[in-house]
Length: 84
Image (cartoon, rainbow, N blue to C red; front, side, top):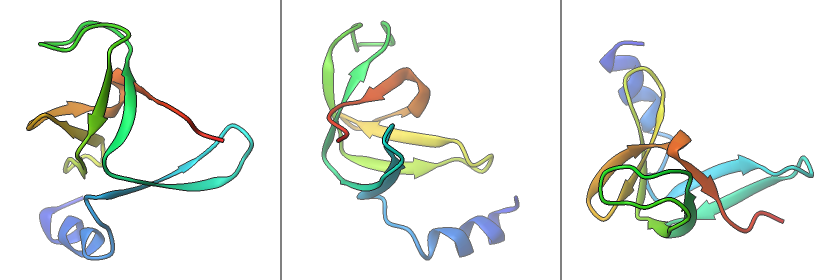
């Protein structure tokens, strides 16, 4: 995906919202800030720590990135908390 295509995609999204499918196969909207559990130590974050996601972004390769305390982290370092 080139930058022009990414800009077009982002036109219809918000950095303050994330849609997820729950284990019960329900679509749920998460609005920032939402809580995630750190899966393992990464930079200043510690395993099992609960942190708040301030914004959600994506890379040019379409990988989801969470903005936490002003720093960007790939989504796969975390587990979303409280999905019904």
